Length: 233
Image (cartoon, rainbow, N blue to C red):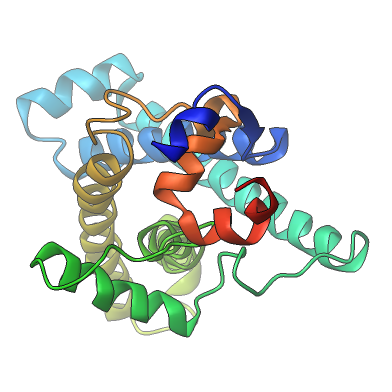
């Protein structure tokens, strides 16, 4: 196979900053999920044990809020990096190698369905597939609504002076259901599509090491391979 010649050739896929930000998101997201659901179901036996370990309801609430603040700071750091990348490094925020959606993502989705049902070839993903872009935008946009509803719930006395009281109840409901959606998506879609596929099980290491092989890029992101490594064919 052509890819065998690139099996041991290493290239950098993620820089140090992106790897650190991912680790930060992973840790804070996990803490938010654990503390949030423990507080929501505080009358259940399993939740009472967790809350007791965290120093009671005040301790769990404090940890939840600190994790939320850290999560938001991580996202802000990423946005600052995007500004630096665009304004100082003169990079491109759009295009085939970016995380911004393109028409090709919809075309890849349709092509992937045709491939799944034996009606065509697999899509030629660029640097990021449509699923990877969904992962990215789900975090970047989802945390905005989670942050707003979280603030409303965290300071109900203040916001009740600005809005009708039922707004706090709506925020509570939205916050919980979006949390269920987020945790379910990460646990089922992100984990199965990223870490549980046979070739990398039990862990896709590139987001932690920053490195991958050219053979893996050729297989998983042939569009990127064709544009960046075409001279090596």
